Length: 207
Image 1 (cartoon, rainbow, N blue to C red):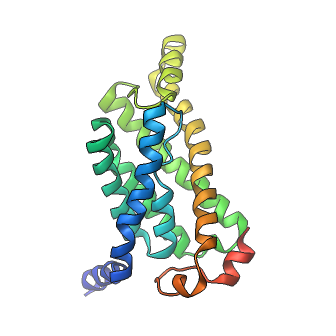
Image 2 (tube, rainbow, N blue to C red):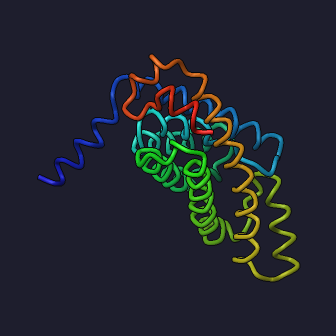
Image 3 (cartoon, rainbow, N blue to C red):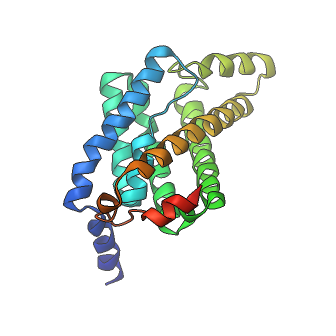
């Protein structure tokens, strides 16, 4: 019975409107991700759509959005992205559950969500970078810095974690700010159609 209730709660997030929103959110992610990859920027910017959909539809829809984003980035940008689909799923779930818990109702909650998401991304992505790619992927500009740290310190884990933490604090900070500003621009009548749609009063008071 509990399992059925859990599955029903997940299913309830996948409304028709949420399903329509998924390709839009994935598209936003792809624009940021492919741009950063092409320019070799020390950023990713591939989670803007995931954060938006986490605010509107919930954690499981955000998780699917994150997974699909990495699948498409693997196809159009670089195969290196695929193992990191786990990271995108985790960040979608973490952000969605924190939004669901009401942490986006004030600035401190939003900041906490950003920090937790950045930490989750740092730890999970670093493990993949170390054990799958040996410490660096070459997918963006930060790989050069990581390689330099490894050469200097001879400590792969510390080098990868340090680079990833700095990168994620900046990257996710930009992502959360852009996502928030975009959600603020969505009309109240549209927001109210989604399960986790933040109402107008909350949006005005949040930041």
